[in-house]
Image (cartoon, rainbow, N blue to C red):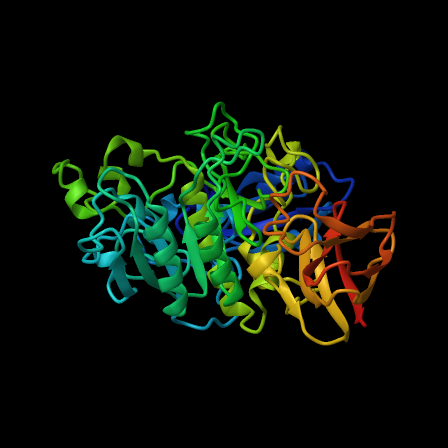
Length: 541
């Protein structure tokens, strides 16, 4: 944006006679631009400035006869036909919000209608509810750590501003998710800790208050190689599953590696590393992925700006710098907010993008919206400035940079529907099969949904026949787990596997006779990168 404005300013500053008009003169193929410029100045008495190899700008009282000069391809008068930004808010700091242009936040507007009032939950440190940027923008606010939802840290207000600060109010910044209403849940204690029970309660509360998007700019270390450091929480996982089961898109930061043994850390934090959560990494202003942004080949789904952002801050925090003019904004805040960095902020930008996508595609399910955001992302490679990124999906940037305009106007085939989710594990997370003969249609995705699990009750001596037909040339496998299996994801061995069919390809079959009664679990697992719809035929006797 700054570059465009600078170019415009330079063009307006071109000297010339008061009565001179400005014309674009095309240079015909094979013509010499320098010689043509001399002829134009001699013929018109005007002044010529180079524009491009194929055109010049002519300032002259008239362009009469210019089109007949040899080497001229066309003559076009410049002025009132100039272009305007498709969506230019009146907020005075808009030109400083570089990240809006980076993700093409407003390029699709007002070309598509949106549904106002979509609720997005910010589960964070609270909010400055009296801030002018949030007038009429907060649906509800509640604290889950005692007291009020007042933000004493600043993080929650910063996140909320990126998502839903008022637009076109001639004040401050422009929030990206302009159709959004905020559900604010304060879960951060005074010591900066987020209790897991507070987070879980807040997630359930947000779902019950009809949130369509939940932003979780928080996290705990994930380390599959060290159980003592790994912070997986069944309570958190169940709360997130509750949200996803109710059609909510959950967006979470992959983490900054500040609690990890090294940076960059090779694993996404929880809850970003939970099934179906949209995990977000950070991008710097120069197009690189900073070292603080966690990597992950499976759970880093998409990237967004997370460096040098401008947003709202509680006014009681900025009041400590009374001589700073931009009270209530991060420029006047503590040092860590003046040039802030973090995947927390990148997650907020993606949450705002999800709101815009959901309002534009109101009939899509949550998993389809997640797939839409991923498939429409702009691939990040060395050509885009990310020397650590590779072509296609990678552990550094996921599918690439969020592209809101591409998501809103996505022309490709939309992701399929899987009505059996969230059946990702044994126990309560499985899908119960009650009929004796059933054909199930579902989908698998290596990055978002590697496992589908179905529970089936067998009597002693009961027989079970299972047939899987998936996408050709994609390896999908079948496993049958014994009664008593609690979490397939946590299984350290295959000792609880009763039967399996794990040959190459997408056609699998097994037939099993139960030696003891109980609930068995059929696992369908995708074994290589890709996505597939499949049919599972289950017959009990």
